[in-house]
Length: 478
Image 1: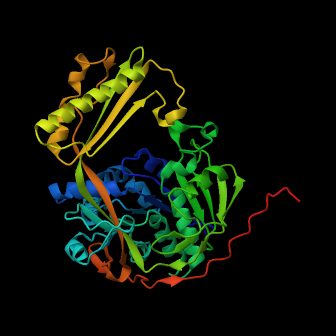
Image 2: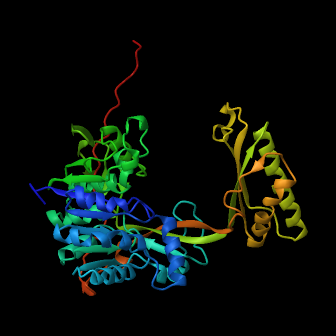
Image 3: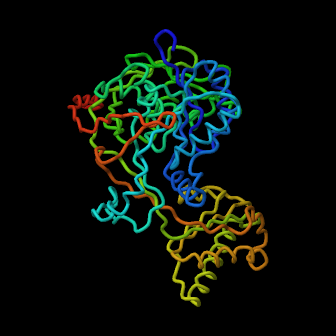
């Protein structure tokens, strides 16, 4: 940390992001902390299934593979690392990394954050009558994963205890940046505005290059898509920070690109609920202070909730998706008729076998502006037919999968491009979300295999929000 400012760079926006980002940030980013965000709801279900098959699995092996080649330089530069790569098996991730580091002759102190995995409480939660917080449906009979979104305090605690690398399971995405800020600056659990600003810093970098010009509305202004710069925040003790990116890379950091990322997935900008703080970002200012440098300040904290959001995943039937290319005169009409033939044929077979109808069917003719509905204008001779189907019985979708290829010689001329072969039948994964008291969630921290006491601020605190600004009148009348 130089000049009292902490530089944090994010090397992963999801499980499967490019491993090249690590080297970019380590060699050129001049950062103090390297952080990674790997987890999404479907990711947790995939990791849970992997662990069910192999007890040592259940984390993001990409993290270990991407990090190990750079561990020597990371250590020599004094960088620290925070990642939610632990998935449903943080200890397994720790053990894999420790083994790889030892083989490379690098001595590291590794901390893990535990307690987000609530699968062992499933029976008790079901018996309590817990319902889904949005739909009101009953708790599922069988779950694949169930994890609370933990906050930043346990990460800070692990760093306080001397960890060089902290591995977590499920936590708020922005917590991987807020934890280091709480540790380095000594922010307390009631430093509301600082916690809000720190969460905003984490939020702006959590999706990797999406915050540096990726997915930007003004895409034509963004150079260097082939070498996008990874996001970096340079944070001061008061919580204000500069958003930037790795130098000499592609991308664009301007108020527009930063503002779009700020609004990503937050719902109400006056009350974005995170484990550590309720964020009010409605008065945030974004000021260009240099090339690819935006000063961000003005975030407010309005207390905290007394609960964690918990997301469980479970199987709910089966699905299969197929795509076919059709190149011919009247291609859109032919594609529609092919789809109708496939579905009608399958339904007849289902009736003969007493399998029931599809639960859901989606047919899209891509290239014919299907996404535009009645506003479609394209007249095309080449389309991709996409058919998605769901059913309660896997056997029915196995039939569906087997009836696609025969259409090539029994339906429209010009049908080709069975790109992925026979479609794969996969389970439908549903999300079940609810709230659980923080006091009932067993958060724990280990550093080098030893327990480290951690205190979670579990009591709800509600601060009064400032009055909403009055909208300027646009009435041009008398």
